Image (cartoon, rainbow over all chains, first blue to last red; front, side, top):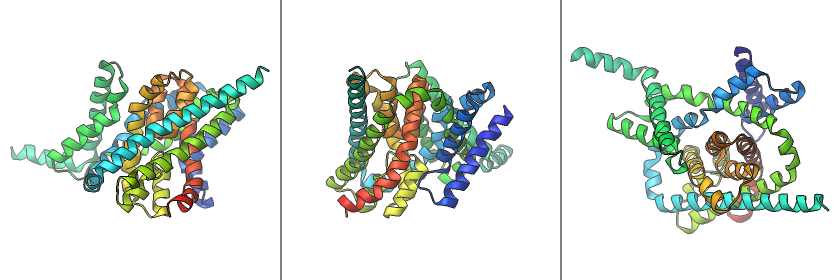
Length: 118
Length: 239
């Protein structure tokens, strides 16, 4: 278990380092995810212990957003003055993003299937 | 009584109190969520945040005091993001098959998110700082904060907007996708991950591994796409 927790932390550390050293436009942990993914591609399978460590982090992923969410209390005032435009924009735009992404992906999938079956 | 007060003073200064508060609120919220049939509208992140903000307000505790305890939970977001490589690897053959669909739908979703958020906020008269801060709303928090700063927004407001977007997507996403009769787990995951990053991914992972893997992938790709495209879109449309 411990060795794979160390591997995960090391991937994140190298990711953070690479991103800030090279000035890349994405977060260190995402670069770390890519590194761990490359490790798995080379290894060819997921070791059981890594499944366990990753599982215990991901099974409670929602919990990890709670501290940042509580930060809403710092911005009550600003959120208050722009409450209506911001909440309308957040809700409508999020709904539209979901609809557009799902529709486009379904259409491309359908197009590819019809081309493949010809 | 005096002794009790001393204990309270000691406890409220140590990180243990607010760490325990964070976990307890989440445990109770998750139980409510499970007891009531895991309905997406009862999002456990939302329920815990409401409960904790209420308690902090009643005890007149500042966010920075709270965060001294809660930072241990917050820290784990990084390693958890790295761990998303595991479901992604397990689903890699499916991801490879739909590579074109993933990239095209991601770009469309990413542009829709930024353009409609800014357009609606501006049309309804939001202030300039709010309008800029809302533009990267669908991107995972650290990247969104960087983009917001670059465009002249308020990074800490963006962080809150990003969390709210995540909660809204996790709550409404499953309902909308059901209405659209979309049953393909990879499509459901892509849509939720593109619109609502990690919070959407957390919910997708609980429901189905394929959805979780596509959602995590969408989150990573959207961070990259938005960081590159948004400054360009901003100069084209909104300046």
